[in-house]
Length: 614
Ligand code: GCU
Image (cartoon, rainbow, N blue to C red; front, side, top):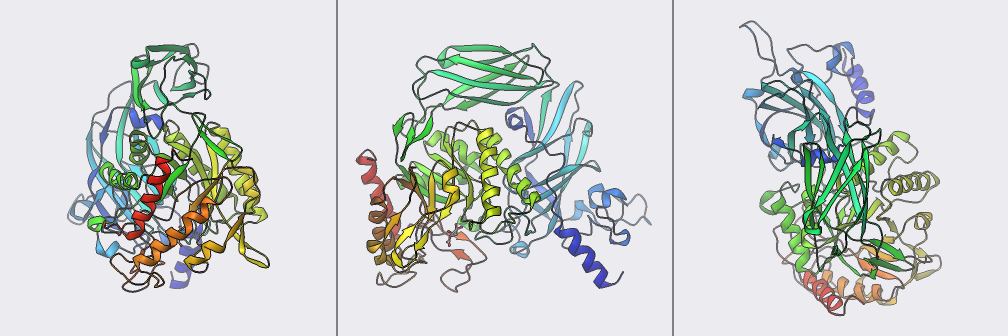
């Protein structure tokens, strides 16, 4: 086959973007008994997709015509000295899971392509039980095989997915093979261009989950309204018969409620809970809630609070709140690290936010590790959670829409019980167009249908008013759809110099709360000079000193999430000695040192907190 045909095949095969096949969210698998498959996995780096495609037959996927010698997911071994098997996981290098591959192997630092992961593990099949493989996330596309048979495929790098393996699991040694491909696609979510590192790999935990034949797969429980002590919600039981009983137990509140399942296994609850304490940043009260069905039970710490808007206010538990926030990428480059892959690293980031006197964090631009939102529950930090519908998405492409919607569904179903999560964000800095407006309003409808208890927003853009250089306008059809009008602004960095802030006024013609979802500027830690010298800590601090009073003048300003907490990797940032592969808009350097602007923002938030955020 000549090179041109091969290239042609490669080109058309690779640009086809499917949505997930066979992958199921099943959120409560996270709480059932499980066996961790984290640790060292054997890998094969496969830039030419040798293990996936058989170019001789132009078949798209080897699973249609597997041959032992090159089909990696068969995890084959030569059966005799003349047998030809051209790979061997047992003699191949390893990568740690969970973790990105980029910071584990220098040769993979910039790598975008496929890597095959193999884990051999012992398991025991138990009659009458079901078994699932649950992945916390894999960036970007994962094709999953167990004991040589394909379970399915998942696309999207930041949300959990699972496959049932009751039929495929063996008692004894099992071979789990996952092809992870982090190539970017125009039709992808995110699309080709972003300002963060495209970390590839099994970036979050993998586990084998065992359940009974009927098991609790999902639940919702929330306060009905600001001033009621009524919890409403449901429990979904896989395999339950109509008329079976499910229970909710909250010992501290002397609650022991039961309800009958309907034909779909759903049991609805309405529970009076006198004296239930509300969750808030000042008092992040969580209750151990047990959900039970027969001998199957799961428990989860859940906080109860309400959030809504009233005109230009955001009300938490019926009281106006100011969001003292910061934007965070799910990265901790400390000690050469990459993607946050442990609760300890998540804690480090949130503790830094706490040191800033934050009560709010924007987890940008994709759903972060679930330990992040769980810790936010415990630490009393409200959360903005976002899907990577970022910049120039392929708006008119319905497959792209399906991918975005799938990520919204997986994000909401994973974190629906997180009291900390108050805002679902649908997009970041997306230029208005009819296709874009249709796409995002459809996504907003889906989001509200899935979760009517939280606010919907998106990071929009501001524009200069024609003929009035010092007037900035936020005018976007999306602002009519969302609950909170949020926008990114870089007056003083991309737009003029810091002193421009003093001259700028804002036109934001919506009777809705306003959140400034990004502002800031770059600085190299330890680089000092006059405040007019770009990249110095003084210049960055001056942007903060000038911006905060400007924002305080905005009618309806209820909070902000400056960009960003920590310097983070980005292939777009190439200025030698200053950026060197990092976006330097962090208030903390990639080696954990606080810049001058960190203290400017801390003092402002301290003052706001002291004034009771009024
Ligand atoms: C944008 C974008 C960020 C980016 C930032 C920057 O607003 O949302 O992802 O990193 O600007 O330019 O630093």
